[in-house]
Amino acid sequence: MLYLHAMGHFNPENVISNQFLEDLDIGTNNEWIVERVGIVNRRTVLPLDYIRETKNTDFRAASEARLYTNAQMAAASARKALARVNLKPEDIGMVIAGSSSPDNIAPAESSAVAAELGIEVPCLDMNSACSSFGMQMNYLSIMQPDALPPYVLVVDSETLTKTVDYADRSMAVLFGDGSAAAIVSTRVPSRAAFASSTFGSRPSAWEKVGIGWNWRFGQDGNAVQGFAIRKTTEGVRELKSRYADSAGRFIFIGHQANLSMLTTVCERTGIAPENHWYGVDQFGNTGCCGAPAVLSAHWEKIHSGDYVAMSIVGAGLSWAHLMLIIGDEK
Image (cartoon, rainbow, N blue to C red; front, side, top):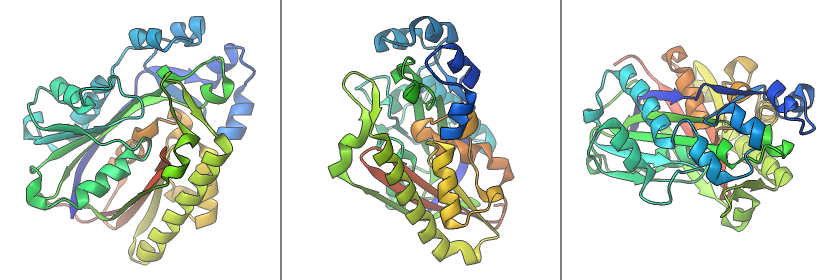
């Protein structure tokens, strides 16, 4: 059993609104964006004046201009999670990180996160792009309890806006930056536990979406959207068939790609609006931190009897389905 002790999240303060994008004169406006992807705002590590003046045509300049590193945002999320469960950084025995937009090829980004927190512990990265959180939970859940320290910190941090060409409206409207953190344990019980987790991938379609050698995001939009809807729908239906009858509330959190995709899944699986938790409308697609950040944002709202279904898809193509059950306070 993998126990979830706390979640944390962080988003940078700079807001890319739909009006901001309209003012860039790239052929878009609020109505066009909301109708297609349901996004109103996004957060970015980049200075807004930098985007206005350059439209981010040079990734190397974006890396220099950014206000936060991935590790700094991940550490901010970690501190929030630690505070929620009354732990200190030195209570953490391992750090695992994931990202679609790492700051460095080597070393592991988790090492930079641990350094930000001032701890000397084993560090490794586990990355499957946007599905990383689900994949990380799946693999930790099948570990022998004694193989891991009492508390493991898992962080997923994205600076996706540094990969966006803001002259391309199809990309400019989608992405935001942020981070999420989870404190988990195979040895110390808590009120929240993952009762089920699965992870899979379709390597033959690996070229459908990704960030290439030039650090620019690219995708076959129609193919990826169709895959995301199908796989998420399959996952939610499977989890509902197994757990819905036992749930006080059956809550759905999906990959925060766009609101249109998530709404379609809810319609196909019978998820009521009040049981669909999301943040993509205000934060955009924040990659692998999107779904766990939504869980963190609702952390104080979960209560005994809640069943939280997380169905997350990503590049690879990859997918993960999690069932988080909330019990009584420990």
